[in-house]
Amino acid sequence: YIIIDGEPCRIVSITTSKPGKHGDAKARIEAIGVFDGQKRSVVHPVKHKVQVPIIDKRTAQVISVMGDTAQLMDLETYDTFEMPIPDEFKGKIEAGKEVQYIQALGKRKIIRV
Figure (spheres, helix red, strand yellow):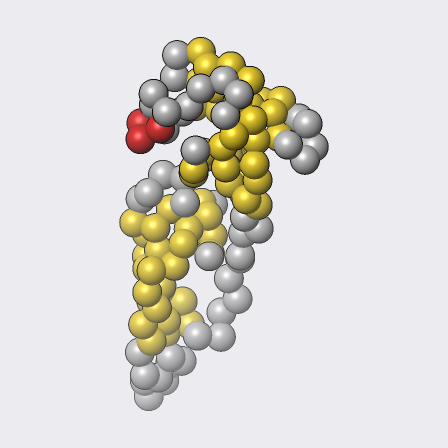
């Protein structure tokens, strides 16, 4: 995982180029955004340091469903919060069920029912 443009991304491929006569070797990193699914790429020198997001996978219980949003309660911290329901899970999420979600950089997303 890597942070590109302030968005946590999952690395798809890394390619490196040979160092030139006057320059360092470069690495091209292609990644897909964790929350928006957008493809991003970045080119850095191989020695360059990059930021890595801390992605937390958690379990929550659905308290209620209101249209396109679900009210969830984290099963470890007992925090309650609202989260939009992704299109692929509409109709599957019901009150009382458990869902898995990821949390990174202050954003959350449901990943499994």
